[in-house]
View (cartoon, rainbow, N blue to C red):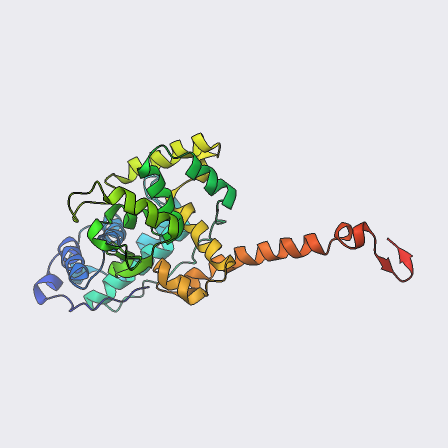
Length: 308
């Protein structure tokens, strides 16, 4: 959980309502360098809390209100409109965000916590499927989207906020400004991305132009169309699956885990370690294939003087 350097609430805020306190809290989050995505996450959690306990004064908040919110969410879950991996995971993160808000208010109230929901199996694409996507490209924009996502591991939001001034083709570096948690980082440009970027840049009139000038919805639909043209199940082609593919392939090719952590922009290396499991499974499958009975000595092995 990222820690932000906040100055705390004023006396006026402490005498006011939860809604006013939330607005001040979010303003301080922005000022401390939190990204808009992070601010939206905190806002969603705190507003959910207020929707259950009411917009009462800060001084009136008690541990009973926390219990009321927890009980309501355990019983009824969340609205279908809330994005996430499920109620367990949403409860886990919301409790963290609300706890930070309560702590910022200086209230000695135990928010408690929830067990984090189990992580879904991470999907990736096979190298031959990536080649199919590239071959299905209709124009330079298609090529640029696939090559950048698969060679840099950028998040969709980072890709769509990328501007030409953020790219140094000579140094083969991309300055990622729209990074999660409000932190900036550098990723590197692969051979294919470099060629496509050089081609597309000849038509660019301003360094302030976005490299991929489209919305997330348009990006999502374009990838689905590419998947259909490539003969791949469209459900398996999403921006984050390409990011997962980049991470997994990087480890397979020997990229050290701490280096991958830096490139992906993970705050905690434990987040990056989820890809080690996938690499281990690949190694295990290769091992079992080699050392299966059919793979040893053409299908037979002598054990104790007997052929099996």
